[in-house]
Structures are given as structure tokens and as C-alpha cells.
Image 1: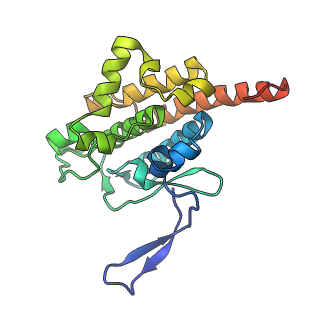
Image 2: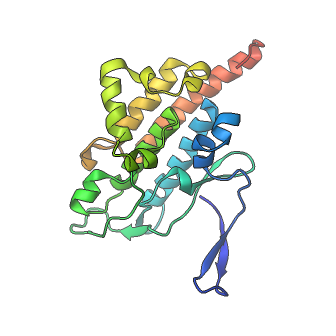
Image 3: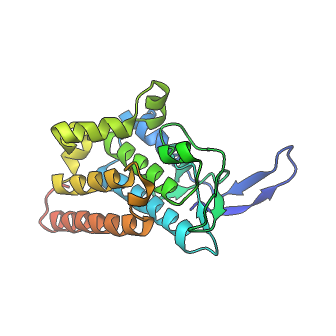
Length: 235
């Protein structure tokens, strides 16, 4: 997560002061000018997913009370000098008691990322974040903007799942990733994302399980990269 240094009280609205992340936000690299000048590699996208997944797992499991972020989106993910992803913007985050009934709150979040079950029931659980994270994974995989799609009446989750059922994972995956990554790595990543965005929250995996699978995929990629370097082939 992005490091918070303090709070400025000399403005009309108090402002938090956080560490400087020189490489801007993930959205800029996926959909802005840099998306065309220097697209993020498969390794960089996978690392971003691991970083944010680990941050959410920490929020859900390591604190005194479970904290739900409620606004996972590429705009709110900053990249530091080493291109590690940092989760930011905790303005909609809430602490909840796991298993407690009637934890209803007005719906907050960015269109295209918000859990439809949360919209329907207004019940906040950690699975709201799991859904949004799954959308983020699909965004990393396809380079399509969930927010812009939602503004145009489209849905990235529905489009991706339907296309996978008809034509497989390759159909909507960014061609750059298909050139850099192995099909089985990308397939595992896509299937994990689909598990995160199933309609019923109780059927989605926990963030701990998600991170464990992402670590296994990353280990597979790192092993392949090391072998390529050892044998002098280009990655």
C-alpha cells in the first residue's frame, strides 16, 4: 500500500500526504499515452496484480477488524520508482465484522468495477473487493477500460466471460501479452479472474487464495525467464 506520511490541516479540506510515486497510476499506463509508447509487459502486469492482491489480503486478514477498500480501480493504483504497484485512495474504505448480518452501506465505487451483488443488496463484505480485483485482472489482461465501457453501456466482465465461452482466452487478451507470455500462464491468470467475478460473492475465492495462485503463476514466469536468460535467448 502507498505510505502515508501525515495530514495537512491548513487547507479547507484536510489532505493526506503520501509517498511520491514517480511512475503515475496504472490507468495511465494501460489507457493513456504510455499505453501506445511503452506498453506494460506481461511480467509488469502480473507483478501489479500480485502487489495489489497482497495489499488487499493484508486489509482483509491482518488488521484488528476486516477492512474493505470498496473502490479498487486502475486510477487508484500508483507505480513507484521500481514499477511496483501501490494501492491508494482509501476514502471509501470501511471496517466490518466478518459474518455479521445487515452490514448495509450506500454503494460507493467506480462504475465498471463495483460488485453487482453489492449494488443489489448494499451488503458490504470482503468479496466486494474480490470482485473489483477480478475486474482489475481482466483490465490488465485485455487493456480495456472498465469505466469507459460502463459509460457506454458495456460490461467488461460479461464481454470477457462470453467471449471465453465462445472462442477461448486468446480472443480478448491483449496481443502484446500473447507475444510475451506463455498461453498456460495467461490462461491460469484469466481463469482466476473469472473465479473472482462470479455473481455470488460466497462462491468467490478469498484474497489469500487469490494471492497464493498469483504467486504460483509468478513463480512459473520467473522460472521461465531465468531459463531464457541462462540459455541466452531473448525473453
